Amino acid sequence: MQDLKPHEIVTELDRYIIGQDKAKRSVAIALRNRWRRRQVPVELQDEIAPKNIILIGPTGVGKTEIARRLSLMTDSPFYKVEASKFTEVGYVGRDVESMVRDLVELTVNAVRQSEQAAVQDKARSIAEERMLDLLLPKSGAAEPVRRDGVAEVGLEVVSSGEEQPSTREKLRRMLHEGKLDNRYVDLDVPDRSLPMVEIFSNVGMEELGINFKDMLGSLMPKNVKRRKIKVPEAMQTLIQEEAQNLVDMEKVVRTAVEKVEQSGIIFLDEIDKIVGKSQGHGPDVSREGVQRDLLPIVEGSTVNTKYGPVRTDHILFIASGAFHAIKPSDLIPELQGRFPIRVELNALGREEFVRILREPRNALVIQYIAMLRTEGVELTFTDDAIERIATVAQEVNERTENIGARRLHTLMECLLEEVLFDAPREDLTRVLVDAGYVDAKLEPIKKDEDLSRYIL
Ligand SMILES: Nc1ncnc2c1ncn2[C@@H]1O[C@H](COP(=O)(O)OP(=O)(O)OP(=O)(O)O)[C@@H](O)[C@H]1O
Ligand SMILES: [Mg+2]
Image (cartoon, rainbow, N blue to C red):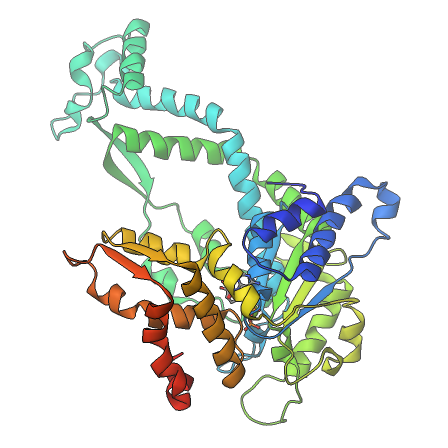
């Protein structure tokens, strides 16, 4: 999927996320702006800075969900990271620049894969020739036929001696028709057992842009192992090898770096977790420090990666956070200024819950029906049952903690616990969930406030 227009992006998001129209609109515009910028004259491109966004809304209303869906529908390099990761206790917080490195790494892989897919046909035909070479004995029969089992390899088809073109073609036809699928060939495959390398971790080496494993991997002689492999599997290996050889890695890296620089998007989730005064002691990495580290990256700077320097000037940042005890204005002012667009997501109520239960493609109700169907149980929900669940969710959210749509997950699990445990059972083929069923299961727990705090 690529180059969707804003309203198409919103339509696509609508399939999974209920409400939150303002947030959908603003991310759709931002996404489309990535494309628009690439179309304007080059001189102007440099002047157009991305307008970073902060999504603000209580917990469980769809912030992360929007990011997840967005990442699936864009062609732009997209990376989602939790800001809290950079403050983790245990070792000095992960260095903030690593998000740019990760984005580049992801993009290089994606570009390489698409390049490899583009040369599949060519790779296949080269691989086929190699396969035929493997299947045919060397001409001249100078090589004595080995007795250790290699001799089985396709030899019945060919008489020894000069390789006849016709023999090769005959073999090719058999290969195409799958008649050789049960044959084995000897193939050198990379030996993956490099246990000693695993000892090294990349911690601390990150900032150098060095990957120990890669380094050692290329220093050490390529470890290959000769193995007997069935023809179809060997064919796949050969195609992969050839595809790798055909792809120009330098070009892949160049394309990937450019894509990241020109249209990269980083989604900074949980940004409110890096707000708050650091106590000045204890093992926690200073949150303000993390914000300060973020500044140059958001502002535009050069990050060294193992694929070379990457400029971050035009990377779009979308941040999100619940901000319930703190406000965006508690971010250090420099950082606030770099997120000019603020969008609020609404708290969800009963009406939304009804729709969330029913409408999204991946709606909870659909999930449970599908799961239980695998056990031979036909689960049905009546409309009034859905309404009851939504009402209970709303009430529990009001009385205890408002955890948004996540409440539906806990409620559904509670509601269906018995069926989920009992299935499969022979006499359990139909379960009708109606309002009575919901009340019977949930009312007793709901009435007891203490109990509902723990269970629902
Ligand atoms: N508007 C919505 N439409 C459909 N499903 C939703 C909506 N909001 C939340 N959900 C459901 O609730 C779950 C939690 O939502 P999400 O992860 O987006 O919360 P969040 O806003 O990121 O909260 P937090 O601030 O706690 O991270 C999701 O798995 C999703 O299924
Ligand atoms: Mg979230």
